[in-house]
Length: 271
Length: 275
Image (cartoon, rainbow over the protein chains, first blue to last red):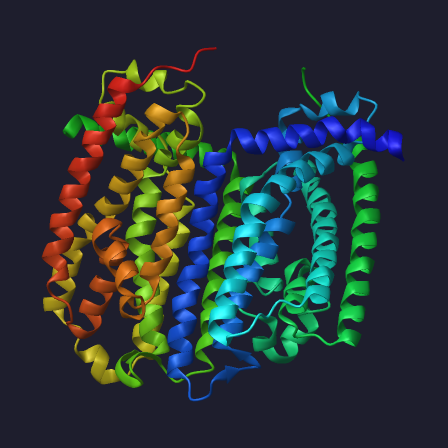
């Protein structure tokens, strides 16, 4: 185990260095993405002003603001680029170089991406959580962060990243069959965004939303966010965490199966 | 000028041939885009199902309000100038992401035509037709669902000025893309700056009055996306904010000049990526 971790350490390092090298690009990209949250921040404000009641489906306006930003944060941290990277390597054939090395194919990607995540934790996670807790503190007058809940949130986030990673790897092998990246990646983004409740909380969709909460997409960001906000009781937390675990195992196995069948079909021209 | 128009049509023909070759790419792109819009509109529907109309309130009193269909109308209108710009001038994105970075820009300098024009027209992005069609469909749907007296107010005296201003709205998009793409002449990559500026476009899809002064000023005068969506749309619907039409023309011309200035300055600073 220790030996295996040592093998992948350079990949993690490479991931960190890559992030540091492109940090300016990264920050601009992030500023662009967070703009969506601010748009919805104002839209929801107008919606709550227009409504007669102060809560909608159990969400007060302050809840909604927290929901927006924590969803963005969780979605961002658990996002995995695996499908795009793998698809690109398959299409241009550089995947062959990875396969002749005595390392595990998907683990390379995993550790490389984890390196990037370490960087993101510092530069995204810290400022946004601190800012958000400051907002909650100002609005409610007391410190809202519940430490055990926060730890459970972190655990759920890690599980969510795992699911996302293996889902993304599985999806990336679609490139074998479709030979297209841009379109399939947009579709993936839309599916994840909608089914994970990133635009509108699943609670707003009634029975349909309840069904969606069992799907793997909800495990990607809705579950951690609900835990962070304290919307779930202990029983629900236990249930949804185990559900996340189930999906993680499911996609892990699926990605292995797809990898095996895809390897048989792989054709790389030239080198 | 005529030579340039002719060249442009040749480029478009080439791209259509490419499209025929990669049908799946096009199809997946179109499906992805349609799904994206459908989800957005569905979510808008869910949000509006909780309230009768979107209100702008000051100290608890309602100052202005927009019905779901009016918001859809604004949303739909915002897609039209954006879609047209996307259709013809999409290649500017490539500038910021890879053209300059990989040294491909040299190609554009060796041809006997304006480099900016060449970059613009090299790619004809058919995917953007989706944006355009969804925009038109939303306009039609929302107009049909509005009360008859609102629709009766939309006359030629509103439609014609907006149609005349539309090219200037497109120019706002193109200018912002040009200016931010030109930054790559100095920094090699600037696609993320374009991305950041572009995301503020989301603000313009909703009634501008719901934002605070900072955002309102920014999206009206600095990155004037509101001039391409909310203002012309609300003028069509209610005849409000007539002032915005001449302002759009003025600002778009200024922006265009500025973007050309940055582009030409950048051209002089450009040094190819060594390989």
